[in-house]
Structure formats: C-alpha cells, structure tokens
Image (cartoon, one colour):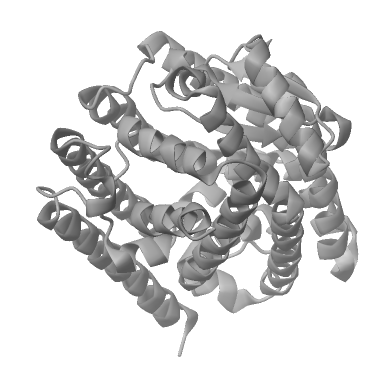
Length: 419
C-alpha cells in the first residue's frame, strides 16, 4: 500500500470521526436542552442551561467547519501540488539556501494562518459576542495578532534556523541535537513567559484582596508549597470568561487570577480552585506532561530524520524534492502538515490521562480545602461560562481534558457526603 493511499485513508478516517463526533455532540446536547440535570437543578436555571446548550452547539458547528477547511488546505498543499509550487517559486527567486527554506516555511505558516483568521474573527466577534462573552475590540484583536506574529518571529526564526542548520550540517545524528535545542528552547520560553511575553498582551497587578491573600498563604503552608507572587490579570478586556493558572518555571513561577474570576467567586471558592491547581503540582502532573511532551518531540524528530531521507515520503504526498539542493525545509513543513492526520487516534488516550489527573487534583483539593466550596465554584463557573452540563459521553471521552460536569460534581460530593 503506497503512502498516498495510506494518507487518504487516514485523512478520510480523521474527517469522518470528527464529523460523526460533532454530529453526536450537537444531537445529544439539543436532546437534553430542555431539562437541567438533577444535581444542578437547584443552582442553574433552565434558561442558563439552554443558553449553554446553544453555545455548545454553535462552537461545535464552527469547529467542524474549521476542521473541514483545514483539511481542504492540507489537500491543496499536498496532493494538489501547492507545496511543490511554493518550493519551486522560492527556488527560482532565492539563491541563499537557508533564506529560501525559511521563506518556504514562512509561506506555509502564512497560508494556514490566513485560513484560520476568518474563523478566529467569527468566533470572537460573532459567536462570543452573540452569547455575551466578547469584550475585545477590533483594534485590540489586530494588536494581539501583530504582537503574536512579532513574538513568533523573534523566537521562532532563530529556532528554525538552528534546526535547519543542524539538518544540513550535523549528519545522521541531527535529530538528537535538534531535540536538545527544542527542549532548551521550550524551557526558556516557559521561564520567559510570565515576566516578558504575557505582559505584552495583558496587565498584571499584585493581588490586593488581603483576606484572600491570607487564605491563600495559609493554604500554601498547609500544602507545603513555596508561594511566589500572586497576580491579577485584566482578562475582562478580552472576555467575560473566568480562569486562573500557574505559569513560569523555577523562581519565575506565578499564580495568576483573571479579574473576572475574582468577581465571580468568593474567597472560600477561590481557595478551593487554587487547591485544585496545587494538586497538579503535588502529583507532579505538570512535570509529567512536560517530560511526556519532550519524549514525543524526540520521537517526532527521529521519525523526521528518517523520513526526510526517503524519496517516497515526498512523492507519496505530492511533492518532488529538488536535486542538488537542500530539501530540509520541505521535509520539515511536509512532516508537520501531515503528522496530525496520522496521529489523531492517540488523542482520546491523552484526554483520558488528563481527566485522570483532574480527578486526582480534585481529590487533593477536597483534602486541603472544603470540597463543597470547590463544587460551588464549579457550579458558578459552569453557569457563567455557559459550559454544557450534558455533553455526549463518546464525544466527551474523545476530546474533553476535564471530566463532564455531572461526574465531576458527583465525585467531589463523595468527600463531604460520606466523610
């Protein structure tokens, strides 16, 4: 069986599964739209439940159209020869090998970004606006895009140059060297993000609510967690959604609260949410996920190192490598374009592992704070964020990184109903 046939089979399977799951999700959510689940009936109104159902269906529809458009672009770049046209175009106009390959990679990135841009605009200014979540102006949206491109170029171009240089100069062992650079780069960006990158997009101010600070400090002491800075981010200038997160590396770690979250939850509920996040640290989920991502990156680099030397890898995907010139940039682009098509089937495994981690973090929060406060926080967040309470079980098992609302609340209730 040729690579072309395998690629088409996997692509069709990927699209079929995504379309089927999207149909299941929309059908299931609509079918349960008119009745709030029993565990939530005293906390979430029918109107809010129906709003969440409509929001979920609209997001699922948009995501499906976006995935179909991305598949069309992938086919156009590979089987229909688009990547070949780009490669020959830059070969005719650019003699400098490294610059030629950088422009090839940049061209593909530009094309895929332009395809995603209308969906991003629609999601922000139509879908999110329709359900009352969007607070972003067009000017801020454009500013974010420009800043994002600038940061991407500043950080990404040197990394890409280093990888392309290694592919041509480091012999058959280049994947190991490239992987080492990638690991170092990833750690550097994680360290840099809280103090340099994130402030380009948002304002961060120290947490000023004294009662909450004292509660958080007591929680950190109980958990044996070294507490660094607590910050509040102006998330409300972009969205009404609330969130909190840990960021950074080493001594540059930060705990960040969206201002929208602080406005929605009381001190006890915020403490419980933070205890959940500390649970991820206590169980080393973040380190485990980071190590797993590094291990997968090594596998991908080794696979790319082998495939880049196989003529059938190029021709089977609609591209003819150039004779007498470097094809490293071509191999890099082709590999990362088609990789999701061949690896989509592992997605449910990572979703399962993520949900398992979430249950562990919830159990940790239940032990170091009041579990009923975490339940109350979740109920408020489900309501305010219009998160569906009735996702399709198969869709949820395939995609969701967090347990479904009903299962998660029932899990937490065990800690204060039976103890």
